[in-house]
Length: 297
Image (cartoon, rainbow, N blue to C red; front, side, top):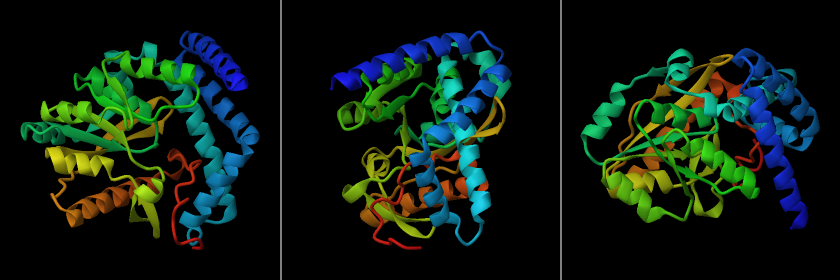
């Protein structure tokens, strides 16, 4: 316990010092440091790199050779390094930054969804710079209630949540604020949810890259009970500091079990389409197929 607290404190101080340094650098130089950090993390974090490679092999064994998959893993770490730098630079992000570096596609989908009066759920994944999505939404005057998993390192976790909330969003812990989320949607509010990690025995299996994949029902159940529209959204890195926030066609969930399953499958196929197009931008480090009954591909 003491070791965890010490590591948390050291990492917290390191993050604060690194953030202060990165915020005085031009964005190009800061991202270069991020890519350098990503290369180093690829070497040091070899266990996770092996998980990423195994996931890629499961998804692309018929389409890509080992050399191509290793390059994707290395690119994944470089993108993660850039994302980490951008998170540490959040205090500098303002409307001018968003106008310069983020292009938003299909904004009318938001107006149509909110016009129904039942709230809106932005459903996304650990893809591109997912943290920039909520910041962008808040700065264009669409603040979110962000559903976030509590991390083990409490100081780092609190610092990250403070960054998330600094532009107008509010963070709620998964499993701790269900009533608050329902009330927010009932007031025609907007909720942001990540839905791309293994949900274990409590999840529902959908087809993802040809394998049964345990997926959380939470966002889809919320939609059923409140009438909130689900809009899949992805922050795609198009090069360096430039991003494209793409809003996909809204998903309306029918109020029955088959309707929920159909909506979950739609989102899984949408995410798969993005991952196939930009495999280096998805966080393959997580054991996405941990609960699959299909052990071999």
